[in-house]
Length: 252
Image (tube, rainbow, N blue to C red):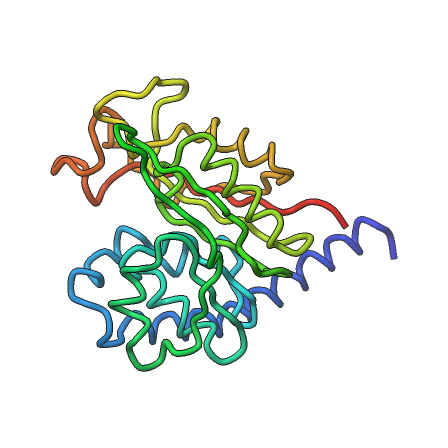
């Protein structure tokens, strides 16, 4: 059998295997999406955030060891935790007070663990961005790290510290999954773009930590977001143009 045919067969079998594996994830996700623990407003965001397609793109499987950074109010935590509860592990890290108070005390979330217990995240007086000290996640051999619409929160130094902490926690080949609001390339800071990030800058910074960019998706591309206004303005809120980037830890 020639080499080209072997490659085609391997790719086909690998793709079918992954599709079958994700079928189990999809079923668990759809069950979690319908759970009463989610509010009506959270469910309303499903159409925009496309969690099933997004997590499939990143390659989530239900037996993975996963870290979610800056989980906020737990929108994604409420989906990831049920998927990983039986066969995997979920950790939350950085800015976990809200999810701790409002989600992790609910039935079904007992297995979610905390990472980065020594981390300190704060915004200096007069600054628009957070700094991150003692960023080490305190876990190892992680399969995947997610951060959804949070990269913009940090200063350059904070982003570098976070990227390095993620690299150190992931196992070789592990995935760093990053989604954020798009900013015009090389646009300087202004009053309307604080919560937007230039994707080219993000790629350069994350690659500098040792990652390779392996894929991107236009799942969250929005042609009618002109990238002119703050993401909280009513003309763009819930419809921001977001970049979706998938990185892999290099090395043996």
